[in-house]
Length: 197
Image 1: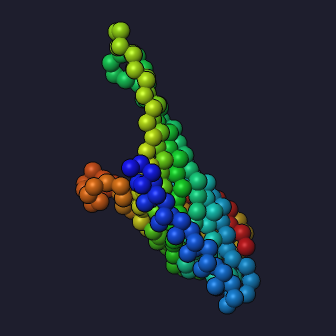
Image 2 (image 1 turned 60 degrees about the vertical axis):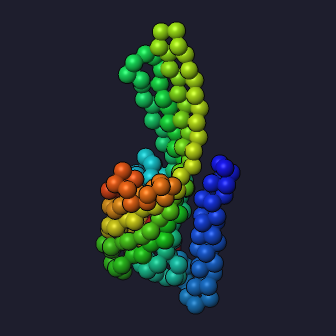
Image 3 (image 1 turned 30 degrees about the horizontal axis):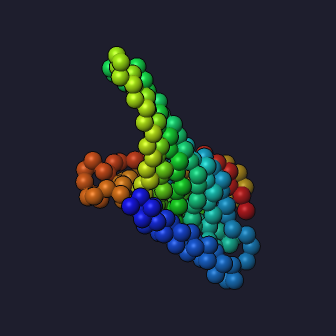
C-alpha cells in the first residue's frame, strides 16, 4: 500500500521534470545568447520548509523575464518536548520543490507568479518516559504539497544580487479533501541569491 502511494506521488514529479528538460532544448534552436540563471536560498516559500537551496532559469535566451523553471532541495528539523513525563519528538523534513514561473517585467523590479509542486518526506522519531512506561517510535511519510506564489523579484540587468518575496495558498495534495480548511494555509517566502548569464 505504501509502495503504491509513493509511486503515485513520484510519477507526476518525474513527468514534470522531463517536460521542463525538453522545453529549454526547443527554445535553444530559436534564440541566441545565454539564459538568465539564478541560484538562491529561500526561507519557507515553494520548498514548504525552513530553508531550500534552489536553481532557477528562464527558458528563452537573452532575457531575464518570461517563462522559466525552478528546482530545489530543502530540509528542516524541529524538536518538541512532551508536556507530561520525559522525552521528545524530533521531526525532520526533506523537500524537493519543482516550479514553473513567469516573470513579468524586463526592468530590475518585476512581478512573478508561479505554480509549484513539492515532494515532502517526513520522519518523526519520538521517545517518552512516564513513571515505569517507556516507548520509542519512528515513523516516516511522504506527501505532495502545492504552492501558488505571487510576488515580486528584484533582479540585476546582467550579473548580481537578486531578491524575491512572495505569498499565496499552500495545500496538501495527499489530504482526503483538497480544499478542507485545515489542509490549506496562507503561506509566504523570501529568497536571496545571485543572478548570472
